[in-house]
Length: 623
Image (cartoon, rainbow, N blue to C red; front, side, top):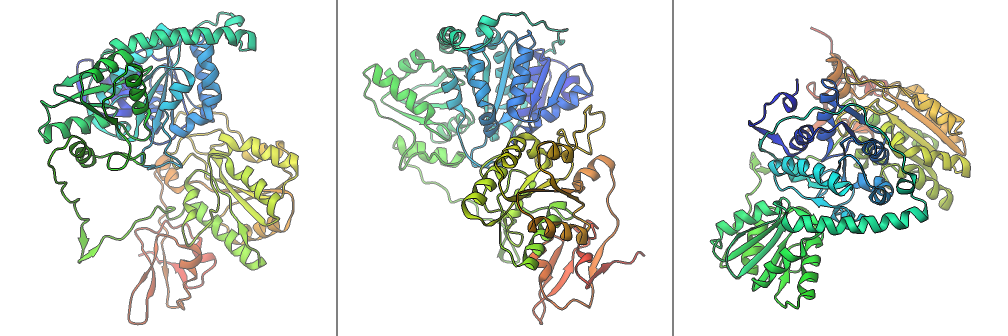
């Protein structure tokens, strides 16, 4: 049984912020959880999946975030408490639903976890999702620690039911993935079946109904604002003429910096956890006591702009700053030394920042860069190689729109198989536009999970419009990059996962793409021939590359190939393997003659792909 279920109330456990959210939802009696995996929120869904195998909790890995939010909304309309989790860009996918769901409202409590990613550790942009709360008119809570994540998640369910609105729980990577002590509460049994009560003139958002729903939403916002004024998640500490307004993980850095700079008796800290609607009276009273105020928040000046607006409305003229030259940047996540330095500068404290620790060196040399790379034995690398050779043999140059997933790592040399990327599902549509505008040979890449997430509409449009490009669907049987979660087309599933397999080939044919090839990329000659044939055709062509992620196979079945390969004396140092393939197991050992090609037996996966096109590579004999 998962520790998140078995740990008794009153105990303190060391949990990730994501795990604290899971435990809190269980304590609140959550009945349904939906998600599409995305870092830094992935562990929320993964833990709930494990628990759903052990309890009566309803859980699903939805096909995308919009679907996840709408499934949850349906259950919330029936009185169930629900939670849906996604990364920040996932809320973009669900935004259409979110904006109108605020009008429709909920019956059972609904918590929407939106996990932002300052510094773009695993994301394509650095947007600040606090603005979604403002745009949708929804309450928002922002935890600073795993303990607060637990407390705020539980409070969010009650707040949601009281106001009959979804509540946003906005986290950041440093909260999601920090492990800290969490005091546990009692678990609440999940309810029996809910019931949908018909009320179409409150729940069907035609214009006449929506006009009245907007009135209700504004009324609920006023009630939420009153709650924020007295919320225990908004509190004041310290004393003195200076003030700091902060929220989220930045609060932790502020508290340490104020203590380390000896400013405890000179700085008051207004920590905001219930950040929308803004508690204007609380903020206004705080400003009235301060000589100058610094706003410490990652990413956009969300609080800073609101705090300045409160000051202007009250006729206060004290300096209020946050972002700007010599202060904080709108870029990337903060860290303790940065916060300490800016606070010292802003409040005139004599402080000299210490130099950052130098990276360790090996044999007197700096540590080498370790760029992200496709794993040894990855089927995507094999498919990329076949495309490169096919284009070379045909004397063609390709343009490669790509998508979100492991295969995005094809960006770097020697593969260099990514030329344009916007977001999930964009490869098919941008390929259509590039091909239409240029007439160049366009080869688009999309993964299996991403294809189901947001590729279906693009392919239907491309067929309908008669575009001209080759789409390669890289099907490795799982959602690999975020931790091997299932999707509708999975071929390997976690034990006990109930799902109906939806074959990609049949979906592609149903969408009208009749020029279709299916290959195993590790069968090089067959794949090369099919790729050349597809490149020589016109119109929308689809090639499905089917081979499982080797890490996923090993994880589920415990099987790992025992075959290993070596470079023999036949090697003529042509460097073809490094310049076109670049498997991480291959490396060049320097010697007097320039270098010797070798294969690291500890990294070699035994996929046997390289032996099909290089005569100098042969199996290592057993024994």
